[in-house]
Length: 314
Image (cartoon, rainbow, N blue to C red):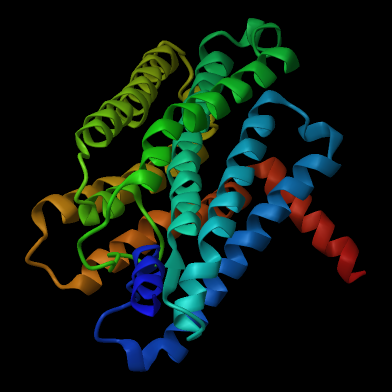
């Protein structure tokens, strides 16, 4: 009876990989990771606070920025307990249900971020290529509909393969490759029929991340074409400067995804530390950099933050 109970417990428990070979350095590694999570949580909360409290920022561009900051905040909250739990020596084990829940939020939030970046590209395209109809096109009602569509696309479509993870038989050693749970990592440990999950998620990635990136690229080709028709070079630079923050946000989101994909596909010979590091970059880099980018590059956000801190100090 005891052996049967142990078997059931082990079957529903997975072991999260920290940084192989660096276990003795965890107390030191926990310091920069704790600082990164502190910046992720406080930085995105600050951006949301500034947008919420400043009536002059209640515009389509900043509504989409608030969606991005909220997504990044949720991404940080969804992984902080496992990443820092490992580094602080609390636990490297996670139950199947908790792992599936984390997988759902990690992949769902990635889909939301991609959708929000596409919506922000549409916002910049409308503002530059059709400025006279900007406010009539991006009304508050339409922005809400866009937000609901992004949320529904990201979470509803991913529900089926995530729910199926609950019913798989995991016969391989329950050792995950990262300090958080990913769909492809759980598939690797399953001995059940995973063909539906493999093909479905591949199609989902093509229809979301790949399609979003192509549409963002097309929007910037059209923006560049429109800007080049402006006679004044000063006006050209002024128009393009409004896109700098968004372009940086797109790069910090897609470059880690491409890097992690390349490491998984072609880097099997690399050290496990490289895989774990790329996984953490994929999870932490966009939520860390986006509030910094928009605080530095967006004049309205920067000036409000500076004024807010000046008032606090006085």
